Each structure stands twice: as C-alpha cells, then as structure tokens.
Length: 225
Image (cartoon, rainbow, N blue to C red):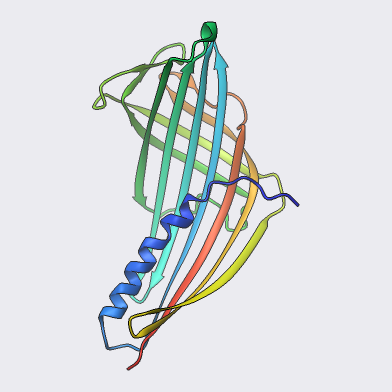
C-alpha cells in the first residue's frame, strides 16, 4: 500500500511542550519519575483553481493538540491558511502574491477531527493581511497592516486505508533517563465546503489534495532519588 502524502507539521510542533514538561521535572528533586503525553491531530487540504488566466492555490491546515502531565490537561486548536496566486496570462508568471494567516485558541468544544480519522469538520474565520480580494477573485497586493477575513467551512472524509507506524527511544538527560514512545496514523482524504473571501468561494471544487493524521507521544523521565 502506498503511503499518502500528508503534511506532518504537527509532529514537530508536538515536541516543544513535551520538552518543557520534561525540563520542569528534571529541575525538581521531589519525584523520581514523571510522564507527559501528547496527542496531535491534523487535517489539511489544498484547493486549486484557474480563472481568467489567474491560478490560485489555497492551503488549509487545522491541528488539535492535547497535552497531559502532572500539571493537568491542556487542549489547543490551531488553524492556518496560505493563499498563493499567479497571473499566467500571455505566458507571464511575474505577478505572484503569497499571503496567509492563522488563529490559535484553547479548545473547549467538540473535537474537530474524529479519533478514528474518518471525518473532520472545520468552521472558523481567519484574518489574512497584505492583500485585498477583488470581485473577480483576484488578490491585490496591499500594505501588510491591511487585512481581510476568510470564512472557512470545510468537511473532510477518509479516502484510503490508514498507514501507521510506531517506535521507542531512550536517552540520558543529566542524571535522568528518558523513555519516549511515539506512534502515528495517516490516511489520504478529500475535502469540500467553502472558503469565502470578498464574496468569492475559493473552494468551489473538491480539494486537489487532502489528508488526516494523528501522532501520539509519551515521554517518561526517571531520575534517581
């Protein structure tokens, strides 16, 4: 079975909170061990269109994280958008615009991405700066402080079997020993819905590419008393 092409940026993003949790433990001497776990789910989709010689590509990524440690459980939601547009009329390719935006919130509602990676649903508004959408879907470059809102309402569903893998790692950290158990599951998907800006839907056709994925990571630090 071929492995689906999937953005795995959330795997890298998951490392930082775990290392912070580990550092907090190693700095103290009261406990002999501590465990930090993180689950990071991600859905991504790319929508492409060509209208009037203007080629547009929009990339949507949403990530849910849940970090559990002795300090408690923290849940977060991050969503971002990237818009790339090029004027290809007459063989030209010199007019190129690339803009983007993101939002971060503490997740306190229902999950956006199902645990079994079968479906996902996103309804969010993201501000994008540095351009202005015109009535025909073209973007006009503007000062960075000038922004517009993009309303995103998308659904994902799985279109392939899930590819999975796991592994372990052990390494020293000062006088402590760190044991890391990690795993991930990935699958290809399709996405439809609306990406509205300036009265134009940049998702008028199904996604050109989409994916659903989840990574799980557990870090156990064992230190001498």
